[in-house]
Amino acid sequence: MILYLFKRILLSFIIIFIAILALFLMLHMIPGDPVSIALGPRATPEVQAAYAAKMHLDKPLFHQFLIFIGNVLQGDLGSDVFSGRSVTETLSEQLPFTFTLALTGLGWAALVGIPLGCLSAIKSNSWIDKLTGVLSVGTIAIPSFLVSIWAILLFSITLRWMPVIGAGKPGDFLDQLHHLILPAFAVGLGWVGYLARMVRASMLEVLGENFIRTSYAFGLPPRTIIFRYALKVAILPTITLIGIGFGSLLSGAVFAEIIFSRPGIGKLIYDMVLSRNFPVIQGAVLVTVALYAFVTLLADLFVSWLDPRVRETL
Amino acid sequence: MNGSNDKLRMFFRNGLGVFGLVLVVLFFASAIFASFFATHDPFAMDIPNRMSGPTLQNWAGTDQLGRDTYSRVIYGGRVALKVAAIGVSLSLFIGLILGMVAGYGPKWLDSLLLLLFDAIRSFPTIVLALAAVALLGPSLELVLAVVIITSIPGYARLARTSTLALKNTEFIMSEKALGAGSWLIIWRHIMPNVIGPLLILAAMDVPVVVTIEAGLSFLGLGVLPPTASWGTILNEGYLVVRDTPWPIIAGGIPLILTTLGFTFLGEALRDVFDPRLRKG
Image 1 (cartoon, chains in turn blue, yellow):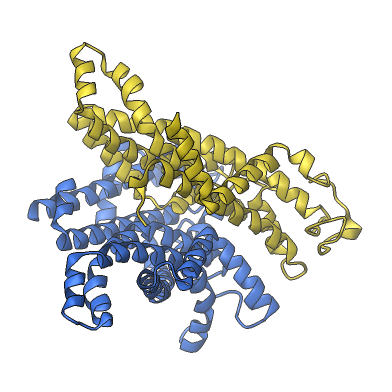
Image 2 (cartoon, rainbow over the protein chains, first blue to last red):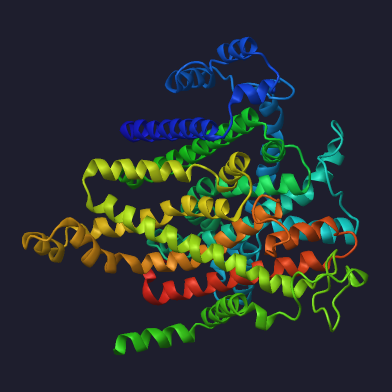
């Protein structure tokens, strides 16, 4: 276990390192000289040289890369080109919004999807099972950004039940909740189908196993067997799925933030792409990748703790 | 011969699979023969008649410039087909080669390639796409590049696993004993045994690719107007959503139909040819 833990954590660090390297190289591929872009055409050579020295742009590329890594490790992601604000500060302001949205989206999907999957496994081939099957495929087939657009069309514009944009007034919890409903619905809808299908499949497998038969023979109530014994085993593949799917959860949140004009990492990256504010984009992408690597790491470690066979595959 | 007949019968007994096949054929046909299916020129403006609902002349209504939405949706299928065909086939090809090399080649190369695949997968697609657009500006080529880079690891991992299983089988060993070179073995003996599951994965990947294109174009970061693509139709429709809902309804439906079609077809093919792949 310790060897696996070590290898798996090392892998995460290598991945983040590659991401930093890729971002650094991409930034240096942009056409144009950063000094003249930052200072404009009328800057004197002396001012340009001073600026280059201050930003370490006069040093060789490899040296610049080391300085960049050093700064990232100290939590310094540079500063906003226009406002001069620290990128780390901006990001820590925006991250909670994205977390709230992603977690509420996933949360309601799990609350609906997992019981639905159990139900259709228990009553497999009944009309409930078939209806769930059709609904699952249906919800998976609608891209999350389309759910956002259509939800706005139906609930905000036609029915006028929900606000269209923003995250609500700061401090007013009910208003914020009201603004969260539609985006969270859009982010989670596809997951309801995914989770229901996944839980159904693994539940069917588990329900056929000996220990479940034995529990029935002992006369335990079906509810106890299903929720206490079977679900515990059947939920494992779902946890990995959530870990792997965190990227698509994030993508869904990015679209929802942009469409609903909610603050958050996705909206931030989008706005900064439009204004070509590279340090902020760089920092935001880096944080997203690190976050993603961390979540997949957690999911992998959790599963390998529950199922030792997984450890041999790395 | 009997075996393939059985498989064909098995496929046609699967109702959803046949439904998927019909949708997929429609997707290809409407994109390739767009001029036959469309009722109007997708760029022809009719300002007095703009933002109308569905009528006998304009089956899905008209947009903010009076262009026929139905015809634009049909022509938009061409962009989707182009992205899907080029994106999926190139990433399948590159993934197949890299995966076989990783599985058959030396251990260090395998570890290196695996690390590379994992690193690529650790970039959330949409975030990678946004970063790339920030640097290079929006274009169809960039959408294709992002799609190809992010889908390669999926194919490569699948090809690698099957190659590893084949590597030590007797027929490969005897090829080696007869003195066949690595490339000959990979190309002539491993590839035919590995490609099946990859083709099924490719069928399931088409809607993913089409959705990425539509999503980026919707954000104004992919294909740009006036080109008709399902994403640009949604983008332009969203701006006038308070005046007419029809463009964003009509622009979204083909996305769902394409996803359903390829998913049903892929799942039916998987059940027929490779039941082992089935997981939920």
